[in-house]
Length: 154
Ligand code: IMP
Image (tube, rainbow, N blue to C red; front, side, top):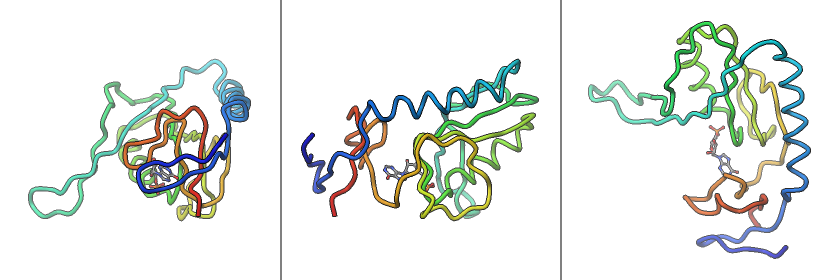
């Protein structure tokens, strides 16, 4: 696989699809085991930030949440956890909706960048603190459709 260019940046192959599949399967098996007999609710949500109208600072709102979370075993599914800022906000919003339990699953996790204390429960792969694209991850709206993951050439 060759180096690719996305907008102004160059990326090189990092993790291919064949490597990702067994890692994802491993996490799925872990979840199946831990939640046997339960019906967890998987949330693939987005956090939108906007400025409040009365200068109360940034307001965060969940996009794509239609179900009630009351009393449910909720698992947040993330593409990547970097600093953990996004996840911390999500966590608070979701806990306010009274789930029975709340855990986090992520495809990728950058331990060197992570600044929070709460536990990331299910991780398919830890990666160094470099910018990656592909397999759903984008650079400024591009590269999301790549079937494997590429890392920034520096
Ligand atoms: P955090 O709040 O710093 O943990 O960042 C989380 C969000 O930033 C992710 O859900 C991604 O949308 C984006 N992000 C962080 N690192 C990367 C990366 O290496 N490639 C693409 N997007 C990233």
